[in-house]
Amino acid sequence: MSKILVSGGTGYIGSHTVVELQNAGFEVAIIDSLANSQIDVIDHIEQITGKRPEFYQFDLKERHDTRAVLKELDNIDAVIHFAAYKSVGESVANPFKYYRNNLQSLMNMIDGMNRNHVRHMVLSSSCTVYGQPDVLPVTEQSPVKPADSPYGSTKQISEQIIQDAIRSGLDMNAIALRYFNPIGAHESAKIGELPVGEPNNLVPYITQSVAGVRGQLKVFGNDYNTPDGTPIRDYIHVVDLAKAHVVAIKRLLEGKNKANYEVFNLGTGTGNSVLEVIKTFESATGQNVNYAVTDRRAGDIEKVWADTTLANTELGWKAEKSLADALRSAWNWEKNYRNI
Ligand code: UFG
Image 1 (cartoon, rainbow, N blue to C red):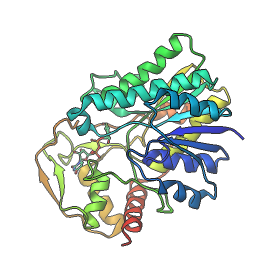
Image 2: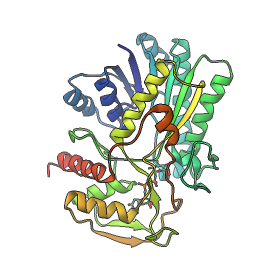
Image 3: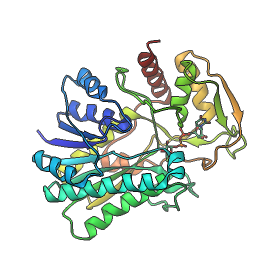
Image 4: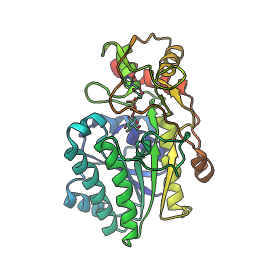
């Protein structure tokens, strides 16, 4: 049985990926600082899969701890590296926090892997690297645009760090997965997205607003050049996204990768506007969303959705769940969490 080390494994995408890895028969060890997640997630993963992942709480910025844990876990076959800060607005206000955390952690992880002969890594990247693309849908060949935020920069630089490490001669294979907009929760409603404080992202804001935890949802602008005037994104169910990580890990472990470094877009291939998300949420859950259109949010792009051909053909992976499935699962998670 192969063993996978998942950094950031108690976080939103990390926890769903741990569940899918365990369901696929992998053994899992998690490293997480718990800076942005809760320890109970480990219990909830165990309730879903019947298997408790190994857990190490420490900060990957600590190079010696990283080396020591990778040495202690001397039977790791591959790493999935999620651990990173992810708030766009916070990164603008506090750029050093983002550069220090997101980049130092990755370098320490690669250093620890190299010392302990772990050769395979899957990296959590983002469609943010494309900025506002000139041509839609976005393929992996679309140009990487100057980042709009330090958060976006850290994703671009993270991809570059891995490529430079390989070019320097490190014996390493890596796959960077560029996520579009992950939403939703596990069907058990035992794990889901739990942002600290006021949510920045659309779907957790909707579910918390409907749950009565937040006030009215603000729709940030309806004067974009889109059919209904609101911005378009490619919203992908987090469980579909999690499954893609399992496929990527198998590709590396089975030596099916075609280069030492590969990149794949992970989206559904379909774009939906903010108003479409609201309407679909209402019809999928029977709940009313209280919203008002306000000014645009600084830094928002107009529209982006993925060309998923490469992931479909090369990985043999395709998003299976619908927007309605994802929104229903997000609401079920919120209800379960708030005891509604
Ligand atoms: N939106 C609202 N009201 C809200 C929150 C969001 O109208 O309260 C709108 C935004 O204006 C945008 C859409 O909903 O049009 C989606 O916004 P999100 O914040 O959910 O997602 P983003 O596309 O802005 O951000 C996501 C990830 C980032 C990543 C970015 C890359 O959350 O980590 O995609 O484009 F950097």
